[in-house]
Length: 159
Image (tube, rainbow, N blue to C red; front, side, top):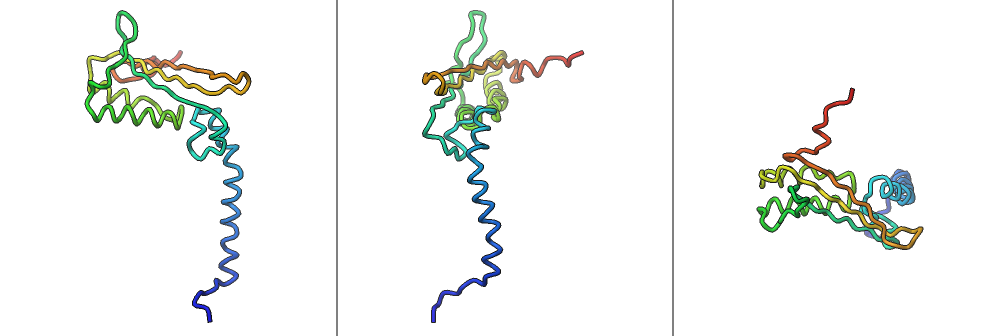
């Protein structure tokens, strides 16, 4: 006599819809993931991207102080360790999640640590392999902040 018990057929049948749902989700996820990559700039190497080895993508984030002579890089080595951790966490999350990850928290932490940096610009550059040209393509977004608040958030409502 075997020490292993067999499950009743009814219990195995109850699992069938669960397994079918898992198969459907796994089969559809590459299409959903590709849409998210295109619409929200998420990293194709993150969030279970099935095509992660078929493309290149990199996100570079810089924090700049606005001066009379132009933009100057914020010296992050001079910031307190907790603020550097917030900035690093933002870079990692922005790279993986794209536009879903806002720089607001990172800028607020930076401004709290260095209130004299009233005017800041967050530069986010995204690099990817353009399939049409087989070259690295680039897109840069400049996000201005005043006193830790996005500049566009201060705009008065339209007419």
